[in-house]
Each structure stands twice: as structure tokens, then as C-alpha cells.
Amino acid sequence: MRKNKLKEILKQGKSIVNGWLQIPSSFSAEVMSHQGWDSLTIDMQHGAIDYPNALQMLQAISTTDVVPMARVNWNEPGQIMKILDAGAYGVICPMVSNREQAEKYVQACLYPPKGYRSFGPIRGLIYGGSDYADHANEEILKFAMIETSEALQKLDEIMSTPGLDGIYIGPADLSLAIGQKPAFDNQEGTPAFEKINNILNHAKKNNLIAGIHNGTPEYAEKMINLGFQLVTIGSDQRYMSAGAKSAVSKLKNIKSKEDSKAY
Image (cartoon, rainbow, N blue to C red; front, side, top):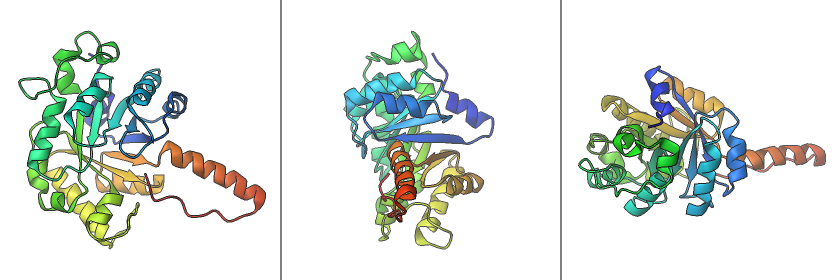
């Protein structure tokens, strides 16, 4: 089976630089794939992407050595299994709040006897290789998003789930969970930053990969220095918006409006 390059990056003590895809286009996915990312995550939760889009985007990504991942829209076994069958090498699952939900998620990613994933990797065999089923349990990365008030009370319970590889912080929902406005790149001293640091410490204690979504490369670098092993920076939609807005603003001499707080 094709090896998961992200695992090799981590073994070398480096951090994964992850890109984010929200636009339902194989061409934009292909363009992003050629920009040097270690991995690209197809956002099926808040992006405008459905399964046929995702399949074509996975095909576009596989023209490079970038590792394909996906964020599913919910902890729903059918969707998790289907995107894995399409060739995703990592899954990010939102709103995992307790051990039971974490176990349900992980087991949907694993073939028996470790889980209950149904066999039928229609494109996984093409992308991963003919021995896909023999090694998929070991190669595919599984990230649980920590972003609810319940999850903040059950960090060790969630992170000690057998088979879970890592956690991923969505700062916007995390901010909402503690009564703050949705925000990225929270600074030291803020309630959200304290929660982020606490989640990171629990991930280290449980030997899990810690990932976080960032608004700027400067903040992502700060998170790497703090100990995060996977950092996402912006998204294709945000890069398109920012680039176009910058060009138009310079020509029209107008002040850019504040960027969207969405992913």
C-alpha cells in the first residue's frame, strides 16, 4: 500500500503544513496541490463540496505527492467510510464530545476486528494499491475535532480512545463553546488561547498528533513552536478572496473590508 507521507514527516520530527479546500472544483484542487502543501483537506462540512466533487478533487490531488484528507460533515459512519473508499488518507471528524463518539468515529475508519468499516475501497485500491485492505488500518490518520464545551471537560477520556491518531482544533467553534465570538489566531492571555494550550498539553500527554486551524502563516509558525504538529493555514476560498481584494483595492484605492471569520 502507498505509504502515508504524513507519518514519515512526523517521524522526522517535523510539522505537517496542511492546506484547506472549500471550493467544489477539481481544477482549484489541482492548483492548490502544486503549491507545496504536505497535505490538503477537502472540507465537506463548511465547504460547498459534495461527494462527486470530493471524488474528482481527490483524483486531482493524486496527480501530486500531496496527501489527501477530508473533513466530514458529521460523525456519520456512512460518509466516513465512503470518503475513505474514495481514497482519503486522513479524516477529520467535527464535534467529537465524548469517548463514545470518539470510539464510534475511530471504528468507522477501521476494518474488522478493530472496527466495523465495510469493505469496498473502490478508489482506495487504485490510489493505495492492491494490498490496501491489508494496511489501511495503519496508514489512515484519524483526527477528532475538540471544539465543544463537553469535549473540554472530557479531554483525556476522548484522547485515550484506542486507534485515535490525533486531535484538531477549530478555533471558531471552540470560541463559541466558551462564550466568545468566533475567532482565529487567538492571542496569549485570552480565554480561547488558554483552552487551546490546555488541549495541546493533553494531546502531548496522550501521545496524539495535535492540529489546529490558523488564519495566518505567522500564527501557524507560533503554534508549531508551541508544539502543534499539524497546522492548517487559510483556505482556497480565502486565498482567492484576499488576492482579488488586494488587487482591486490597490487599483481603486479603497480600504479592504475585514476578512470573513469562516474557515
